[in-house]
Length: 135
Image (cartoon, rainbow, N blue to C red; front, side, top):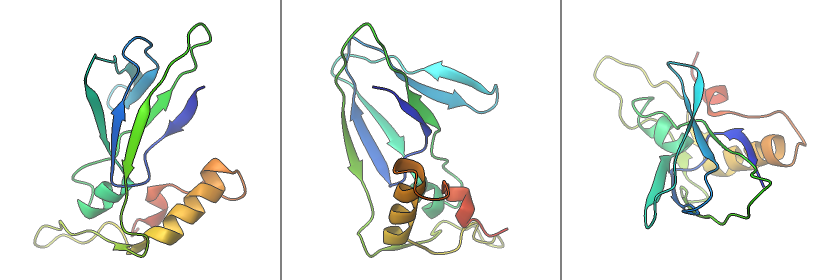
């Protein structure tokens, strides 16, 4: 099963990939190309998510990635998602002196619900973290 390109909504994802079937790709923004993330035995892949991007005020950017379906082989992966507390208000905490916050405060509950409706269940607008930027 493949997964369309996305960033992870939460704070941190720890992924144990199948070490025999490659399928994860990350988008390399400077070259505008997809790059394979080869699985390695006994190794975890760690992604930061949208909430770390907000907390860091864009000093760290959640990677755009996708999972390709490989019709010829079965694969297994185990992702562990670390998210803010359900009632948390997420906002930039790393703002340099003289800079402004790039994001308005975000209710994790509302973000997750809206993100799910639009991006997963296809019952609304596709919401991305950039929709919460102060423009």
